[in-house]
Image (tube, rainbow, N blue to C red; front, side, top):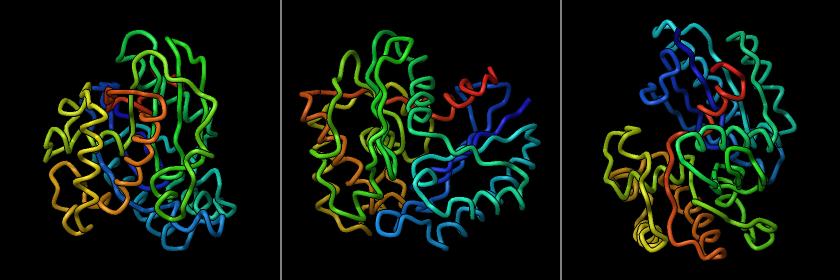
Length: 278
């Protein structure tokens, strides 16, 4: 049995193909479509992002067919939650691929992130997931005791000045501080000089605040073109990575957190569990 999970994020669309739900060895695919671009100003998805997203989903469907995937699930997060014209993409995908996009709410996004990461780390954790248009903070020990989705992420922060003091409030970090999602796995990839992305090279990496600040300072000193050649940094993230890191540094400084553990297990594995597939 092969299953494909597709995550329509605010910056990129990712697909992982699992054979018999072997979470340790999925096949990875990603395209950047910047679905959240322009969302802050217009409240709508722009035509180019819709077209690029549809093209990516068609491409991923072909890949899934080549892999003889038995079933495909597609879910979407903050950009699709916010966009007043999200039905344009939903209808196009339904018509061309025959799959309904599951637009999950902020609480569900937090829950699936926790479900994916918590199974790999013992004890109480506080989880942060920095996306393109939102950031989720979740705390719990086996069960969630706190979860909140904050409407700011790397793409949004790039598009408009946002006072982070006014966004992040009313949460405490307890237990092990864990990070999932593209911003944090990219920091780990840069630290570990990962030229070809593999879960084993990312999972469980511990990164100190000092290391994160050093990486941020080095990236800020570079042009975007030069960043595209940094080992561990996907070229498509070169223009937004510093905005995601800015959010992480803010949260860690505000809460006096010295280090974070990186998990490559997250929303996609959590979605499988949320849907009761395993």
